[in-house]
Length: 112
Image (cartoon, rainbow, N blue to C red; front, top):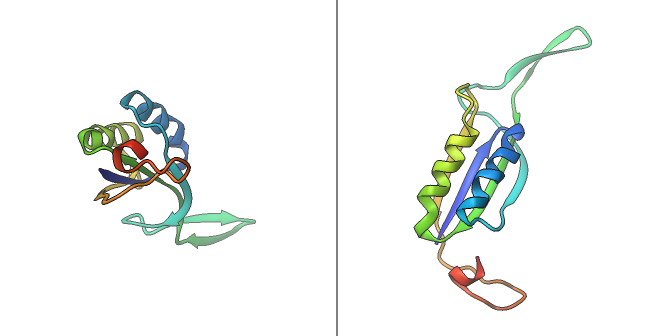
């Protein structure tokens, strides 16, 4: 099993979710996060004063999937979240040692 974590622009969430559903992804977790990468934030103007925004709003998507579809999930996220502009985000893939569905006690692939 794999845990796929993606940091994406907020407006891309619906497109990413729609791309993952046909692959068999039945659930995902979304968290609002802030951060910066190579963009180093941005300059904004508020009430005529210019100020630096160091951390930009992003979404973190986490989805646990069987190893057999992990590459397809990563590809779907990358292709859907890409806008060809700086700040599109990143995808990380981790080995997932164990998963248990609390309600039924099902474990590993059956729990996904």
